[in-house]
Length: 417
Image 1 (cartoon, one colour):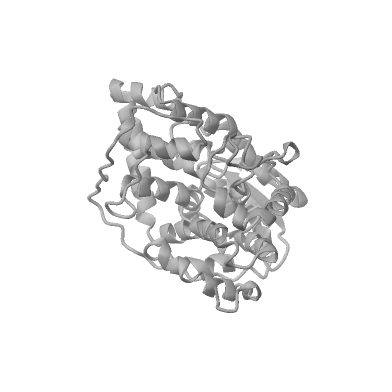
Image 2 (image 1 turned 90 degrees about the horizontal axis):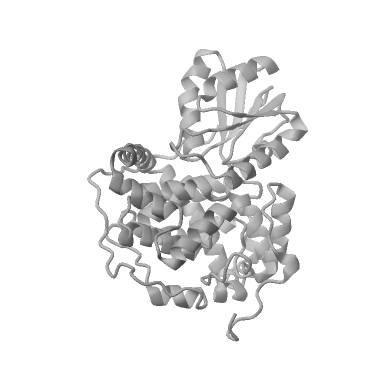
């Protein structure tokens, strides 16, 4: 570390990503006081995996909804006014924006999945592509920062957001590898691997999300924001935007469903492992479901998989429910509902992603078996997602309105900021 920066991480504050709600709340309490000027000043720096005092590291818990965005905003606004924590609050809403935007453009996810399957087939047939891909995913490209981040990703399940952007840019524009294969690598290994944030961030770097706008990883930028840890050579000096021929129409967000009033089976999934708190009553039973290798022919990272499994196991414990691995959810859910003796399955609404795909596929078979499926949207999503129609800045302008609708406006400045 140079003299320009404080000692950002005290030893006892090293973050262990424990897949429980209590651990997420502890991390939130540790970070909240630093969500203002400290975060705004240092958030873009990647000091290394043992020096994360400058960022929140809340994303693994948020991704699984062990803690919620609303809880994070409430805690941060107890320590800061909106203006004081503006940069961090905007980061919370970036995640919201991506989820809301993909919810209204589901064909982007479908297109990504189709192209990923196509590239997986090509990996088996194209020796050149296979060799270059193997060098990239094993951290043997010769680009020091990229190779380091690959190992950090697979060894820890986490990367600083700036490192993710640099990696994606190097993958696409220097290594000339398909972006879908890189997005798949992230989604399989990241503890916070979120379908919307991951897919749309890779598309943004590539020039597909904001048409024609790309992100170029530059050696001087990497050297500055890694505090001199890396000085990469041989990076691309131009980033021509990728193109696609398909259009992605905007569709309406489904109308909210009321929580069930009778007996029901609670379904928990990786998009919302604490879904019982949006229900109006306790379930007759519960089940947790994870996909296996449906998303990719490559296996998920063991760290990310263990976190999700641990989160589901912990959430299911009060209900003595089982966690199951399955790529066909219909049979498992029908059997579980019949075992409990209910004709209703309720779950927190899964946004666009693999859990949503599997549940959509199961829905007709559940209906044929006489079982109703209730998907309860959280008020935070219902309020925020409709503003994610175009770019982020459209939603950004509505942050004060969203905070008021969430009854968090008491912390707004007098001028409404």
